[in-house]
Amino acid sequence: MRVLAVHPSALMYTKVFLRLEPLGLELVAGAARLAGHTVQIIDLQVETHRDYWRMIEEFRPHAVCFSGSYLANIPEIVDLCRETRARMPGVFLFVGGHSVSFIARDVLTLAEGAIDCILKGEGDATVGRLLDARQAGQDITTVPGVVTMTGEGPPPVFVSSLDEIRPARDLLRHRQKYFIGTLDPAASIEFARGCPWDCTFCSAWTFYGRSYRTASPRVIADELEAIREPGIFIVDDVAFVHAEHGMAIGEEIRRRGIRKEYYLETRADVLLRNKEVFRFWKELGLSYIFIGMEAVDEEGLKHFRKRVSVDRNFEALEFARSLGLIVAINIIADPSWDRQRFEVIRQWCLEIPDIVNISVTTPYPGTEIWHREARRLTTRDYRLFDIQHAVLPTTLPLEEFYEELVKTQQVLNQKHLGWSAIKDTLGIALRLALRGQTNFLTMIWKFNSVFNPKLQLADHRRVPRYEMPPQPEATEKIDRKALYVHAPVGRRSRTIDDATERFVDETRMTPAE
Image (cartoon, rainbow, N blue to C red):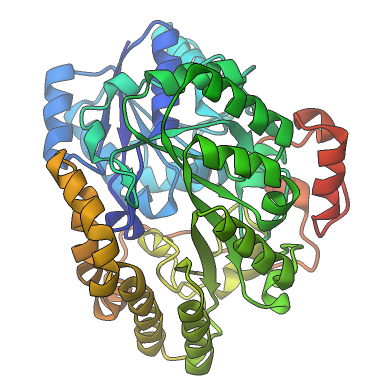
């Protein structure tokens, strides 16, 4: 079969600070190609709907699959599926990815027959089987993870090994368009998949069933050798949970003489526990480290169920700085914040040298916050679920909340991308521009055109085309097992040693599973 794999358009945040290659879609494309199908990819982050229709006409696919990893992209996906169905009535249309896995029936209902099925769970595990079944005229609901309006297949399954399928990077037509910060251009790579923790705001653990699986150092090094981009974003939810695995990858990279510049995300407690791993990776080219602090006080940390004390968070920041790393942290703005709270956060952020990102508390399906807060939603418009819009009641009038939020973001933007900061980054920007890379330079000037309280408020006033269904009343006790896409199977799903397993359990807020 001829298969077109589609990544939707950029979201608000990715229009400025980063644009990452669609690694998940590349893995699905790689799996489909491995199964004998002919595949092309289009990424609407860097191409247009006109390009999409041109590819449809030229390629004439038998199947089109969409990446539904983000809720805010759901309206665009449904609209494209509706129009594609109208133009090509016989084409097989399906959607997979993180977010749609939690709301499969809702999306099928919105599409009113335009989408044939949702593929829940790890798409690279079963996309080949789905396409084969469709091509043979067989019942697709025999395929694990498939959901249709009339039936559902067996539960989703994992790929048997992360070494098994390689991303189809060669199918992307504009690889120079992907960047993160000054890593321009940058490719993305996966060292491990899943997360063994259980933060209330996150759905990584509910998607993967609290599993944690790793790729082999040899395969990772092979992939890094084949990647042409000098910058590498390690996509792991928490990098180097297992110190031995991180060291083994590093040793293989050093043995082969691979030189790249790396950006990764991790937890403060993992950084402090595995200091030797991060020291080693600094030698290998690690330059950026993102630490999800989420809150600056004990009450906030408890709310998000991050069992890391404020003191330990600050200790981790100091250690990362001591390595000479560029440190970025995330703070989650709660809708309950008033003007005084925003001012306190602004002052705190200005007192530290690190890059600070502010996101907004957003209940997502698959998270415990969703089950606790969904009835309180002030909007059910999918487009606003992008961690930059307030979808819960705010203490301040909504217009004032956005004014304070953007004011805070602007202060931080001026700190790192204003004229004083440009003196430090101008040389980098010019060197990149001389190589034809202008993503970072463009980013510096785009902030005010994207982050604007009037625009954010206007987004709320648009009549929504597609809305989430009303949610049932929250229950006192959440059935945690009902949250999972991939069912948890306990310790055997985590490729970590016993000491690391104990560390994970000690740093979780709920009993071991």
